[in-house]
Amino acid sequence: MTTSSETWLEQLHDHGYRVTAARRAVVDTVFGTTHALTPSEVYDTARKKYRALGLVTVYRTLEKLEELHLIQRVHQPMGCQAFIAAGIGHQHLLLCQQCGQVEFFEGDDLDTLTKSIARKTGYQIQEHWLQLFGLCTNCK
Amino acid sequence: MTTSSETWLEQLHDHGYRVTAARRAVVDTVFGTTHALTPSEVYDTARKKYRALGLVTVYRTLEKLEELHLIQRVHQPMGCQAFIAAGIGHQHLLLCQQCGQVEFFEGDDLDTLTKSIARKTGYQIQEHWLQLFGLCTNCK
DNA sequence: TTCCTTACTGAAAATCATTTTCAATAAGTA
DNA sequence: TACTTATTGAAAATGATTTTCAGTAAGGAA
Image (cartoon, rainbow over all chains, first blue to last red):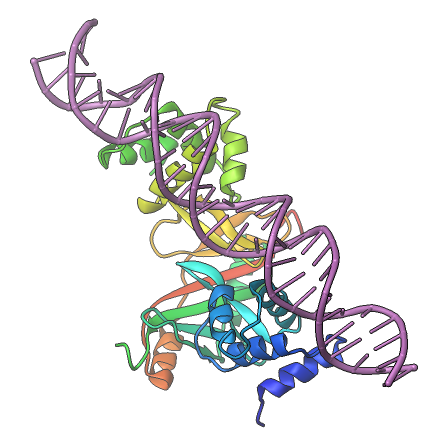
């Protein structure tokens, strides 16, 4: 199962969006990184591939990629504007506090906890966010 | 063990900050709510207690309260600008998606998960965020 | 209490991120 | 190849937050 940035472009096309040079540059940039990138960082990197790119187009393209669940916003203490390629299925994030690298992991078993909290509080729990922060192998 | 907004004012004072009418209004507002409030919402509410209050002072006061760990920022899909009185010790958030009410809970046992992820990824894990979203007893 | 230093204030201006507007361009179907 | 219309970048507008600044007042010292 190999995925490439072409897959994202196909998805855009399949949803009635046009595939343009500007969008290719943005898609290639976000697809090809393991670090969460802000719109401004995407702009800087993508402009190396396509000089005429405008920041506005970066915002608009990220919006569409998020809508198609191809990327997701990353929340951090320092800010919540960065995006990363989305994980497949229900996954959680592991972030390196030093270099900003992002990894996904699955296999959380929060059912017991969730049910217990639901019972105690009376809430009907519908989703959860779990994120781990630490130092990656390079940084520690 | 009863806590009142006076405790927060004492804390401000103990850290060399002055206790002013503007700060009382902000502190009273944030202390006395179970919903996460944005700076602008704090401003609107606090101005009922102290008409001359400026929005800038709200920002500055929230900054200090956060610095003293008396309040904490609440991250939500819709935005991350809201604050709520901080939980005591290591607590997690439970948010009502309908009315925005916030509750705290403890007793997460993520040690097993954390260690397992650390082993698999090589990361040295240092902290975690866990948040549950759902509907409170009133809203469901 | 009164004085005095200096932190604090609100208003206005500046900054920064994001969104909207708009006329020109180009994707991709017919 | 032609044509419709989504997309583009630039500029302007918006919205949130921060900085600047001169006047005010908190609270320790006398």
